[in-house]
Amino acid sequence: MATGKRAKAGARRYWLFKSEPEAYGFEQFRRDRRTFWHGVRNYEARNLLRDQIQVGDGVLFYHSNAKPMAVVGVAKVVKAGYPDHTAFEPTHAYHDPDSDPSDPTWFMVDIECVGPMATAVTREAMKQEPALADMMLLRPGSRLSVQPVTASEWRAILALGGHEESW
Image 1 (tube, one colour):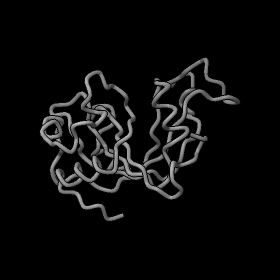
Image 2 (tube, one colour):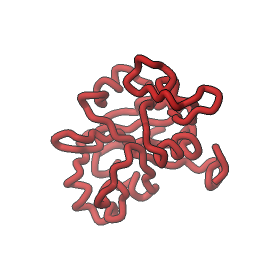
Image 3 (tube, helix red, strand yellow):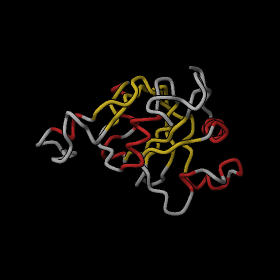
Image 4 (cartoon, helix red, strand yellow):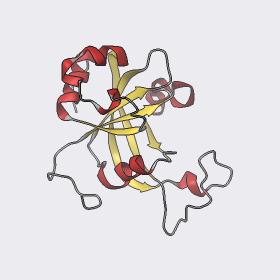
């Protein structure tokens, strides 16, 4: 796929972004209203941020390494992939001395809060939903912090969480 191009012009795509609530939880995101999604240091996830995630795409905000692990909210992409400046800051936790500002290694996107799920959609609830049987998140060994979600998975999770798509 060409950089920055969609599979079909104008087609909204969907993603799941993982965050540990102690590091950056959904309630903090709700207060902030908008944030840049930085610190991703996996090449496959980086490629999604750099090449595929576009303005207007939907994001499921997933609390990982939590009890329970769950989709707790919805966001939308408001700025497509651009260099992750934290890689260039020597004192930042996500500094990468091998990343060069003239040829950046790491990328991020900006997301805006749409709202919380009426009911958190736990990983266990997702495993019980036939429409989510092939979801990347539920596959053994799936650890990507940014991952694609199909349109049918998106609709199923919104329905489970009691969230209306209103944007």
